[in-house]
Length: 482
Image 1: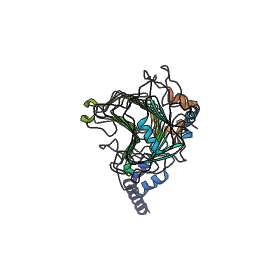
Image 2: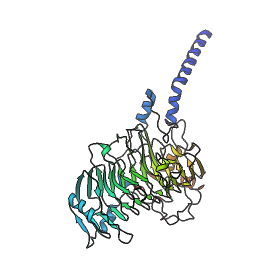
Image 3: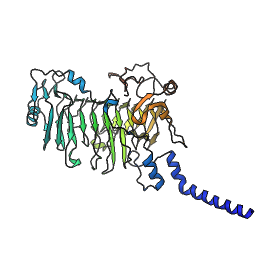
Image 4: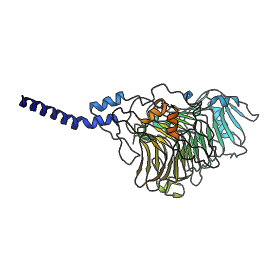
């Protein structure tokens, strides 16, 4: 009997050891799925052939992804507000009224400072060369406006490398839908290219669909497009981008003091080239610049894709120092990323690449790998953020971290603290659940750092004062998440 017992005991010990060494790492991955390690890219995914148990993880662990059909109506404080434009549909006496593609191209080249180009509702297919504008220079008191007669009802279909080419200051573009219609995805690069002298450009309340870098901003020799605004727009792709070119819906190079605010940026998955994509970034030796109050969802589907989808960045993929403005050592100086919601990115939510004196304040990073601060040129103040993942310093990057709430994950259930703080975070409803959760989130927050000379409002549209103390992108969520 004793021999039989010892025989069974040895058998079970062998089975236990075999299970520990062969399945143990995979069971751990169920509790803490993390396929990301250091690489030259932010935290690029390692491409591995998963064993059967990990394949089950990817098929079943979809509750953390955005599972319902996407609608901008769920977030009324971000994205285009076309009803507002409809109320201001008065047509000035000197306006140029456009009803076909040929007249649109002609109007862009002949418009005078102070005039409006007003486009009637319809679809405007344009192919071939870029849309050039007049060489007459508008001013602050006499800007040029390009807008829809009925916001949201004008669709400009582009079959060209780039669409509107802006190289003059004080242009305003509003109420339009830009759609890339190229047979090859590589051909649809930019819907709007802002270059050189095109300072004080305002691009607001538009929709951009299927462009690798829908808005591209950069220098033209020694002329720099400073003080631009990109706000209340919606950027997305209808299919995965199988291209080698950069995929970044908002790409700001060289321009100082740009504001990227209240946009919806989503579904920017790149399968070609380095397989790395960004929602938006500022780089190229810029001074200041603010990325605030945006909703960024790297992937709204329940599928896992290879590569690395990064939410927001200062520095992006980087630029050679000789090509940066003034050839400075940093990609950005004094830039701010605040009050954003970044979700469902298989890489980091925020990536700071050679960002000097950066401020990262009051963001929510949900289902991302967290924040990455990289290279000795980077020194960041990281304040009042809510995130899962972690804050990581690499390659001599530096940061001061204050009052950040980092969610922990249960080893056994896989559930994170962040899921208990908010109503339905996996589908973008960040209404705080209970007074207890509210106290937990805000009690340790430090006073909000206001930006001088800017409108200081939170993600939900509330005015922020220097007495406010709160974690995450809003102090109150009334009428913010539908």
